Amino acid sequence: MVMTNIEIAGNTAKEEIATIARQAMGLATGLQSVAPATSASSASVVYLMETAKQLAIVSDQLDEFAPSAENRPEM
Image (cartoon, rainbow, N blue to C red; front, side, top):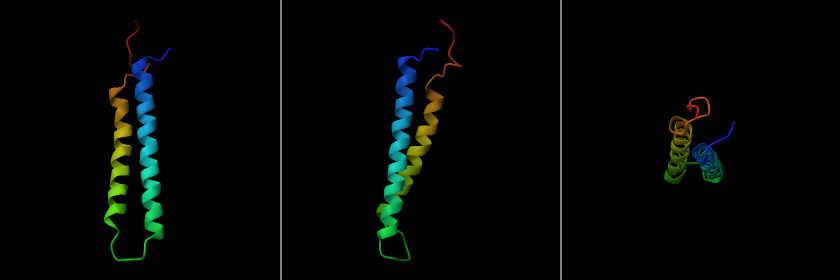
């Protein structure tokens, strides 16, 4: 099986976006751990967590747009 450039680009984008999502969540968790205890989370922490969640969703949705070898017609 040979992967097309579109499949390679799609897989690369998916992996990179997932990596950014994990890093954003890790940063948010770290900031929350070192922040002084308050009744509400910092807006920056909330923003990072929401951004990480959205990036994870986008990463998962990329499977819908990139054709896989199983779904690609034979040439």
